[in-house]
Length: 192
Image 1 (cartoon, rainbow, N blue to C red):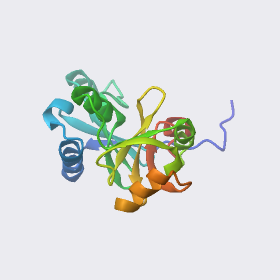
Image 2 (image 1 turned 90 degrees about the horizontal axis):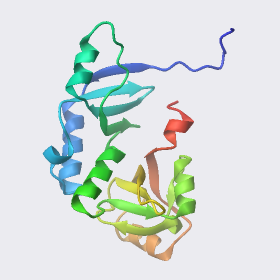
Image 3 (image 1 turned 90 degrees about the vertical axis):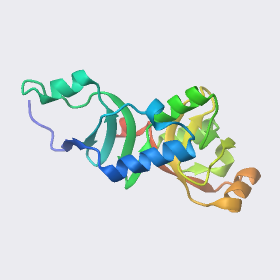
């Protein structure tokens, strides 16, 4: 069988998590999400990278042991805690979901309507007109929540800030207010 010339090669690497990345995650979880790091994150953490997107993973003892053995080629193992993508270190959707479940409330979250969810999952930015509800703090990286099942579908950063951001949302303007950093659709579109 001939190999396709259009096939893209996957670049893969594995490493320890950089201290600066760990501190960014810890600060965001503790200060913005108001959640205790030790209750949300189980250490030790490893970093798996595929074509420029990295996953910070809490790995189990069994995964670490298998990874050290020569006969196994562990590509990924454990629970995703954070994501490093396009220069941002962000909590994973797992972390947002765990915090929302543990605290019983949304924090640093935007609930989007059906059209907003669809566009966001295609990698597009979120418009003010697509926002149903928001939970402070919103002038930083936020989770985007699907209004149908109330699950996190991605992470975004504000394009506008402060009073302007809140005014655009309140007036339901047809303007982008959050830039898509990461969304679940990336798994279908590919990491290229």
